[in-house]
Image 1 (cartoon, rainbow, N blue to C red):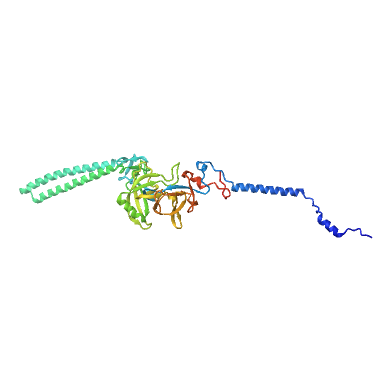
Image 2 (spheres, one colour; image 1 turned 120 degrees about the horizontal axis):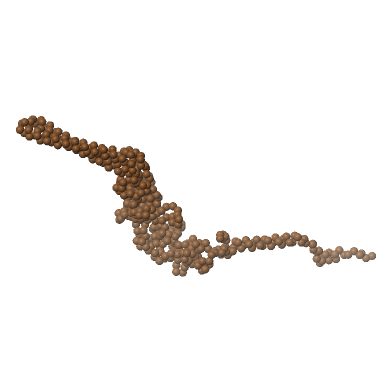
Length: 433
């Protein structure tokens, strides 16, 4: 009897050729995966745009003509020859040219205080008065005593002449004649003493009117009218200071002494006073206050600090210099004639010394070693390594290398050049705006 069961080998072949039955998919799971992928793609696009997209730059004359992408934008200057003054700088203290504390020379009630606080006075102007009556009385007494002594002297001279004639005729002794002459000499001395007392009394009387000994400006009153002025008081009545001219004291290191002495030997060097501190109401932090001349070089070096003390005199026409104030002082000690100069920003410093970047005719930067003789905020004097007329980089040198191609931009475009627009594909910070 035939077997109705299928052949197992046939079943295996059929199972290999027939496709398997697909499992039913979950609709919720597919939508969540798809939403996650879309969100990640959007976040990646936003991050790329924020990171790499260039920021907007205000359109300027320099941005309309941007440098070629294969060059470095730089600002240049030309090495030129000029006379360069050599200045020494130091802080200084303003000092009144003259200072006088007006004190009474005699004692007495202060009947009048004529000077006003802050008043400008001339030498000889009346400042105050002390009650003169006691000193006038003393003068009158001295005059009366002198008149009395003069009368006695006249009588003694007459008697001396009489005794001299009597002694010649032997009507009087020589002793009487000598005594008469001695009396004359005694009274002459008393008259001279009386004249001295008159002079002293007249001087004391003149002291009751207090006058200004110098031209200057009066300070705060130290004694008011109605008080008793005493010659022994240390405070005095008022302080006078001379403001025109005025002095400035400053110090320099002792290493500058040869240059200062040489400058004083040629002529009195020029000195400029500048203000100190921050800018006020649009004024620069350092503005020129006055120009003067060096007046005094102290006769010794301070061994404690190794400095020399100097004093300069200024005319101070606008009274911008005030006693006790602090200023910056610049002293010119020499002038280098026909010196080769470049802006100080052109000088770079590296491990092998100072150098500049010279721009050739093909707009290629070349590193050139130089020697700097004198440098200040305005110019740098090149003593070796550079020729007149050479074009040197003053801004943008930090991005240069020997042989770099450059594009020259005007100095007005330097701020935009220092913060260039980042090229796509470079990492840069976001520009605030």
